[in-house]
Image 1 (cartoon, rainbow, N blue to C red):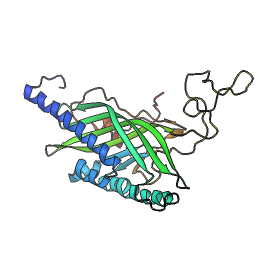
Image 2 (image 1 turned 90 degrees about the horizontal axis):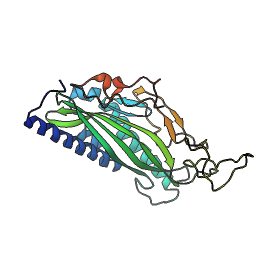
Image 3 (image 1 turned 120 degrees about the horizontal axis):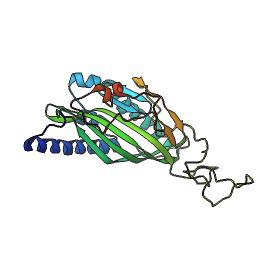
Image 4 (image 1 turned 45 degrees about the horizontal axis):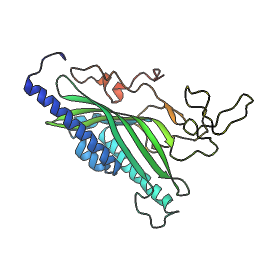
Length: 277
């Protein structure tokens, strides 16, 4: 069916649909950066009762399923977290206002949009590079560079494209500032050792096959430490690099219609034994 020949009119509609989807996801990017999360859910996500029940928002910790659970986590949870961050920031800046000392800026690129053959659903894939900044217990802000994949299922609802499922699966967090006790090589790793076991400052690691052993940085700073996923999907944090299950069902094979087993909702979550490596 996917090899069928579309009419010129159908091809124009499909091309335009892809542009609308790109615009929708870009709006989502800006809304999130501004913390317009309630606005995002109301304007950009599905609104039909049945679709709202199966909507999902996932990160490395698992899936929040249903618009009520999504809103509790994504809107109410982040608002509470921002208030806590503001209290910390005021230790350094007494007159700080809501949002001071916090940054959540991400850009989407390397975008792929795949329309289903029937034109009713679509899958979106991009890479997300960004920066996260938040205050520590003393109110001093710390920044991290982050990157990862963002995947989405979209559905045409009453003629308009809407977000149905999103998986924001970041795989890398790097401190923007040097890590205490680290030598700066391999994303803040310790300096290399010579043949006698003595570390040499100012030289790159001899083994360039991957990042050297890293200092213990504690939990991944990018993951939101609030909320309980409806469907947990635990992962292993390995300093900057996260050891994730393979997060992308076969995105490059067109599908005739929506298939839950290939979706970016919890039904399509891959076998956790498969990994990137």
